[in-house]
Amino acid sequence: SQELEQSPQSLIVQEGKNLTINCTSSKTLYGLYWYKQKYGEGLIFLMMLQKGGEEKSHEKITAKLDEKKQQSSLHITASQPSHAGIYLCGADPWGSNYQLIWGAGTKLIIKP
Amino acid sequence: DGGITQSPKYLFRKEGQNVTLSCEQNLNHDAMYWYRQDPGQGLRLIYYSQIVNDFQKGDIAEGYSVSREKKESFPLTVTSAQKNPTAFYLCASSIRGQGAATKYFGPGTRLLVL
Image (cartoon, rainbow over all chains, first blue to last red; front, side, top):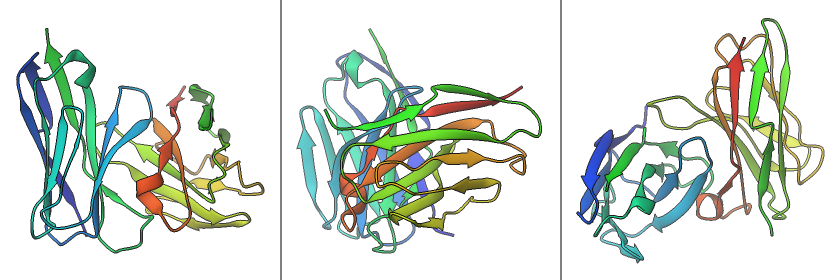
C-alpha cells in the first residue's frame, strides 16, 4: 500500500535555530501538502507543491519538492515559539485531487 | 467569518452506545470528509461526500455511518460495532474538484470510552 514516511517523529530545537522536516514517498506524487496542527486542534494548511523542483515560502517556512516528486522537505529558519506544533505532510498519489495519504506527523518543540 | 465547526469538543461513549459527532460548514463547500487521528499515526479517512445525498466509504468505514442531507452538514455516527472508537476525529471540507489545496479542517472532537 502507498505510504508516506515522515522524519523525524519529534524534534526539540532551541529558539532561533533552523530545522528541517522530511516527507518521503516510494512513488511519484501528484501533489504534496504541508499542514500544521496545534495539539488537540484542527489542521491549518501551509503549502502545496505540485511541480518537480518546486519551492515555496511563507514567512520563515520554506517547502521544497524534489525533481522526482517523491520527497519534500520543510525548513524553518530562526525558529520561534509560535512554530511549535505538529507538522503533517499529505500527498495525492493517484491524481484524485481529494483523497490523500498522510505522514504520521513531526512533533516540534521550541525551547526558549 | 466562514469556517467549520465541530461539536462537542469532548464526547464520552458507554459500551454498546451509538454517538453522533456534528460537523457544520458555512464555506459553501461541496465536499466534506471525516478523518480519524490516532497518536503516532497519520490521518485515516472514514467517509467522504462530494455532493448532497451521496457519500463514499474511506479506508476505515467499518463501525461508522454518515448522512449528507444538507450541503453544510455531515454528521458522523460511531456505532457500537466500532470496538476501538477512542480517537481524535477531524472533519474537513473543500471545493469540489480542487481537493486538498482548498481543504479546511474543523477543530476536532475527542471521543473517549467510559
